[in-house]
Image (cartoon, rainbow, N blue to C red; front, side):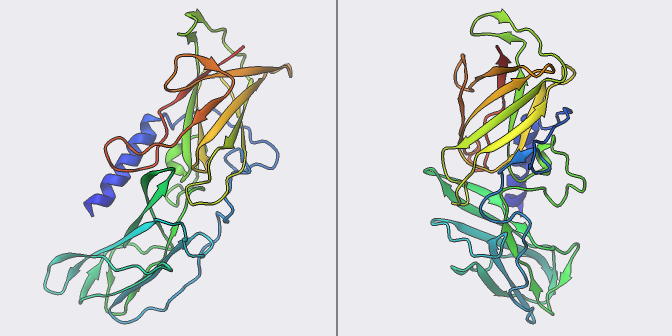
Length: 303
């Protein structure tokens, strides 16, 4: 079980460092999702759940790994790992890993004992690198369960949407969402020109546009994403959360309280200059655990 928790802890640490607890109030644009993101869903429904694919069989651990709509995950090169831990009848703690078929189904005999909720991961290729993410159990049980009647647990691969643990999802909190986060901060000083930046007036809206330059990590086609946020001098750090994981080019405009629009210049992570268009590129996590992350934050100025 230690591998699962290390991946989970790594992801939480990355998101915490990313400044995911901004207090800015978002202003969703027309037709947007609760997170203020438009056209942010992949080609698969974010709300669908696969129905029961198998019936429980005595002393068997069974289930399926699918997309959120119940279809098999057909992305070439993916690998799954499902684990179930339990205390067997002789008092031993054991971990079992069932083999998984091409259609995502698995079945493994269980000894007599009590078993904790199963967990799983998916390892997948993206743009020439490998990444790992947790699979989401469908209607998981709590505590322990007797293996004698059989245990059925389906899993889905989610890349966007609120996490089950977030009972009241906050769009400013990256830990509440499956999608990726891009923290953005309004610069007060330009290190490229060595000039102080004039503060934006309260009530300014920053409208971000993200254009995918790759497919989404699940192999589906991405769509342009528009996010509108309110800027406040009380909290200049903001986070764009729940972006469908992909590589993007992005830009922004500022709409001042008087309705005037001004261009936004963005400073990329590996450069010391500001420009109208920048790139967001997924990278494996630095410690070797290939968790999907993006660089810590970008800064922006309004001309």
